[in-house]
Length: 529
Image (cartoon, rainbow, N blue to C red; front, top):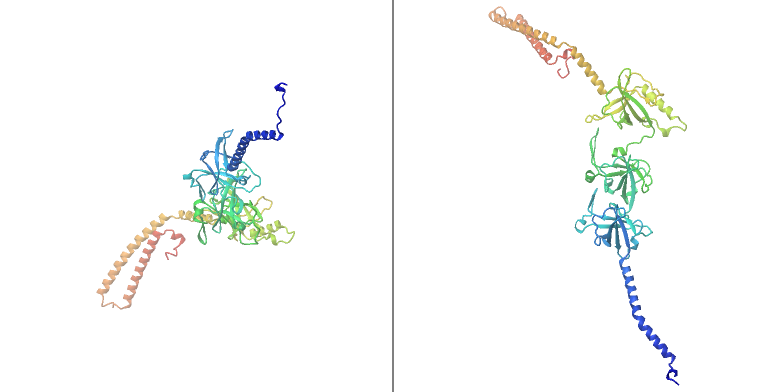
């Protein structure tokens, strides 16, 4: 039997399996361990890096890849990784790596901005960046949805989201000295600030967003008045000079104040983002609102310089309306100039109480009867000076019993009310009349006659003195005939004294007429007497 055909020796089955297992374990142990180590390193690295986000900026000024940090409340929570331009080259896109466990910070209303040195209103921020360099500030939102792509704010928020209080919106025709960060005052306490402003779409007004801190926001009700408290409010009235200001800060950078009228029931608190009107001053804010305004027309034939829209209309010192418009017109036939003035009157301030009328009462009929009665009793409109320094005028209604009778034509629109010349114009007319009369007096002829009379009087006095001297000499020589205490001597002495007094009076009269020739017409004044 050949050797190749010899049977193989018998190998136990367990020995075969043992050899097979030994070969597999030696081959795969090292790769498996290496793979496990790699997975562990990758997972550890991913967990240690934190989420990646993108932030879009208008400009990359102050930003530097790998160095600019992201901070929240002074704690570093991320670092800028890369900076590149957008595809349209209008913005800058930055990628940043956040610290681990910051996923809860990255929600829809989270905000980012670049912190730089800024001066806005009363706020000065970011001075530390002058040494350390700019960094990215962060405000964590409260939304539930997470987000990884953000658009940065151009300016940092004035009020952070976690500060208690409420926002309100103020409407004003002009911004003035107000700016972001301008303080808000309540009873001269700083209780908030301006956070933003923008021009309305119609271009006629601006919307100013203000924030009032808690608990002061509870004092803002639906009837609260806001006014511009910038600078110094100076008013000159019958009680004297009044100077008001909220604080030195409001003088330097401006300010807004608010207050609720104390009269009437307390109204509920205003809702957040409620809209209010921003008045120009405290007086404007608390001016009584006309409940039943009616438009009337006045025609003045005198100068209306100093009368402007908004000027008060008063009835015996009581404000009853204001001037709406001041115009001009010329009569085409007589070429006479006049100034039509449109005014707005509140009938309630003139005695018509709408709330006290019986149900169904005709308010227009009551108003007509009232105005007809006032005009019939001599009520007229007159221009008066409101301020001698500025020359401002106002319209005053008062009783003038000697005024010509007048009636109202209710078919006109608006109805024209009767007027009377102002006191100043009447005074000017009187002075002009007096001057014209004085111009007609022949002062030169009167002066020549006075000079002749004075010369004649001097000659008479000289003759009288000579006669007196001669009489005295004769008396001395005739002492035996006429005694010093005789009746003739006394009469002669009295006559001479009367002549002397008459001469003295004539001289005084002549001197006074030289200084006051108008006394021939007007007489001697009280001061001269």
